[in-house]
Image 1 (cartoon, rainbow, N blue to C red):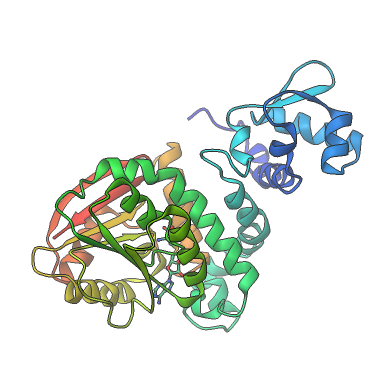
Image 2 (image 1 turned 180 degrees about the vertical axis):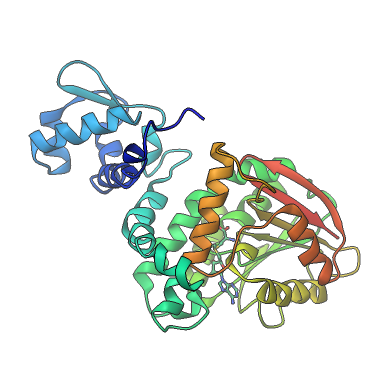
Length: 334
Ligand SMILES: C[S@@+](CC[C@H](N)C(=O)[O-])C[C@H]1O[C@@H](n2cnc3c(N)ncnc32)[C@H](O)[C@@H]1O
C-alpha cells in the first residue's frame, strides 16, 4: 500500500472530508467551470473571503481536486469536476450527505462498537432507521439524493453486466426514487418496471419516470418489503438493500421475493461483496468502511459471496453467478 507515513497523518482524514465538503457547499466546481479563474473572481462568485478561499483552493490542489494555473489562478481537475452538480459522474450529493450527516454520525462509532447497536438504537428510536427518520423530510431528501448519485455512477456497468432480453417485468425492490429501474427501462425498451419503496420516495420517483418518458411502462408502488410485495414481475433487482439489515430481516425480504416470483424467476442482488480476508487494497477498505457504516447506520453488514449464497439459499433461491462491476457485484439467483 502506498499509504500514509504515520498514524498522525491517517487520523487527519476527516480534514480532507471537510475540505471537500466546503468546496461542494460553496459550489466551487460550478463557479470554476471549464477554465481557470482568479481567486478574486472566485471569491466574488461564491461569496467567500478571498484569502481564506485561496487557502482552501491550495488544500484542494494537494488532494488532486484542483490545479494551480499560475500564481493566483485555479482550475478543477477531472476528479474535482465530480463535485459539479451536472457532472457525469457527479458525487456532489454524496459529498453533502457525507459532510452533513455521516461525518457527525461516525463520530459516535465507538459507542456502536462497544454495544453492537446503531446510532438510532442508542438514541432509543427503535431498530428500523428508515422508520425512525420518517418525520425528517430534509434528511430523507439528502439521503435519497446521495443514493441517486452513487447508483447513477454504476448504472452503466449494471446494464452492461446483466442481459435483460428475456425479462418482461422487472421490479426494483427498495428502488428509492427510481434511478436504477429508470436506467434499466431506458436501455431495454421492451421492459416494464415497478419500483417498490416507502411512500416518501413516490413523488420524486414519479417525477423521474415522467422526465425519462417511461411513466407509461414504469409504476411506483408504495409499500414495505417486510410485508407482501406485488406479484407479476419475472425479475427482482435489489441494490444496496440486504446490506442494510441483519440476517433475520433479510430472510423476511428474501422469502417475500421468493413468494412474489414465478418459478424460474430471477433475483439480482447488487451489493459490495466482502472479501474473505481483507487487505489494505482500496476496494477492500471501501467495503469494510461500508460495513462499519452499516453498523453505525441501519444495523446491517456487508457480506461475503458465501454468506449471500447461504442467506438466499435459506429462502429457496439457487445461486447462478456473481459478476463483478468495480466495487459492486451482481449476485444472481433463480
Ligand atoms: C440504501 S437505500 C437503496 C436505494 C436504491 N436501491 C439504490 O441503491 O439507490 C435503501 C432503500 O430502502 C428503502 N426502504 C427502507 N425500508 C424499507 C421498507 N420497509 N420497504 C421498502 N423499502 C424500504 C429506503 O427508503 C431506501 O430507498
